View 1 (cartoon, rainbow, N blue to C red):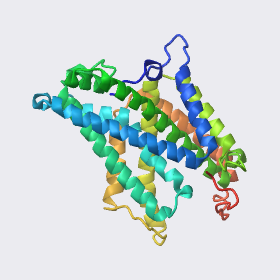
View 2: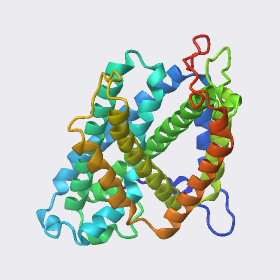
View 3: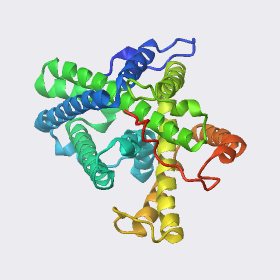
View 4: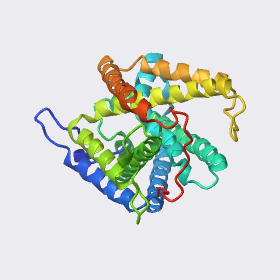
Amino acid sequence: GFRIPEALSQAPEGGGIFNLPAVILIGLCTLLLIRGASESAKVNTVMVLIKISILILFIVIGLFGWNSNNLADFAPFGVQGVTTAAGIIFFSFIGIDAVSTAGEEVKHPHRNMPLAIMFALLIVTTLYILVSLVAVAAQPYTQFEGQEAGLAAILENVVGATWPGTLLAAGAVISIFSVTLVVIYGQTRILFTMARDGMVPELFHRVNPRTRTPVPNTIIVAAVIALLAGLIPINFLAEMTSVGTLVAFAVVSLAVIILRRREPDLPRPFKVPGYPVTPILAILGCLWIIKDLRIPTILVFLIWTAVVLAWYFAYGRKHSHLGRHEHVGLIKDEPVG
């Protein structure tokens, strides 16, 4: 929908072209994360506010181009079309999952984390629905095929000027930077916790004494992401991220059910509403979307999962403190952030 600059939006072609702008973007995010979590959070907050403002601007202006006739055939490809599209764009919700990785750096996490996740989910979903509805109502669905900058084109047709496209392009760049920042941050904190437990090498738990950030961890994660972004087509990466997110959500929902049965007396400041219906529906919904993904995407995901499981049984399980029933707590003299 956004008019993303060509160098950032297009994947490397078969001739071995390296997506250098994507790598530079990841490098900038890495430098910011190494500087400190608080600085990263402040910058990201500003970027998120700008993104939300631009999306609201699109909704308001796009309403002037509303044509109910465009909604007459609301789902031209049926339920199959909806679930297929959901499987491709589901990675957009990965930021909700990333919120939980900041638990150790949040004040009063038992209260604030559930509230942050619920409010973020509500706001994001509402904006996604409104933007999609206004876009489809302002332009026949047949015109979206092959259209590289759908939202910008819609606003330009409504306003009769090119300035909306410029704003949306700026919003796209900010959005890419913000999402990349959050994804790298979330992955480093996951590896940080795993390293503290011993499941991955201690290097991922090493914290810089001045910035209090896991510098080696951040550099390694950023290097891997940069390699993937530079060499692999963006559409394939999107599908891989989506299937990973769907499986993660399904596993978390299953974990809720298992923990309720195995550890019924655990302190639970926040309980999943509608249990057990909610987690069961979540699992079924994720599986329903996954079944419509392309076979190559699922196969690559299964191969990657096999590699991770091999690492777990060969290294992680043997070195895990929790696996050996040892007490592991947060190292107070090594806060992250």
